[in-house]
Image 1 (cartoon, rainbow, N blue to C red):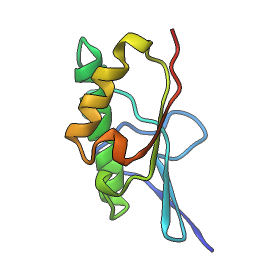
Image 2 (image 1 turned 30 degrees about the vertical axis):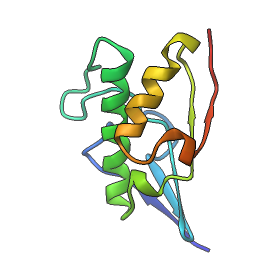
Image 3 (image 1 turned 90 degrees about the vertical axis):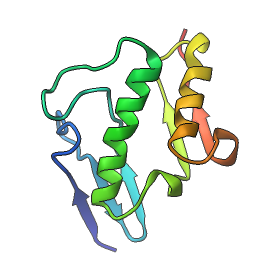
Image 4 (image 1 turned 180 degrees about the vertical axis):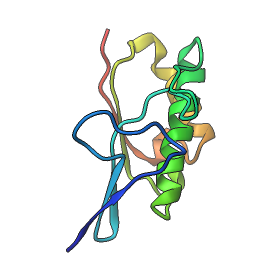
Length: 111
């Protein structure tokens, strides 16, 4: 199978030796996204909900460019937030697609 690099200017550019996403066969593997505005490069949002919303918009832009969507996501892994913020994160993800209970959703929680 062939690997195809996926990138879009509608999400922050990859910083370092990785791609925004790689298509391998019928699967698309994405890199993590942060809450950066792709037009300005500035961090947006003052709370976890706003930042999660922006990160998911960035991820959706990458998935759009790959010809897929958040509704087809099989697994997510989130790192870097405290346990007290996980519920806000899950609510924001649910607004962008299926509920977390319908996904294979692994959260790596850091205090």
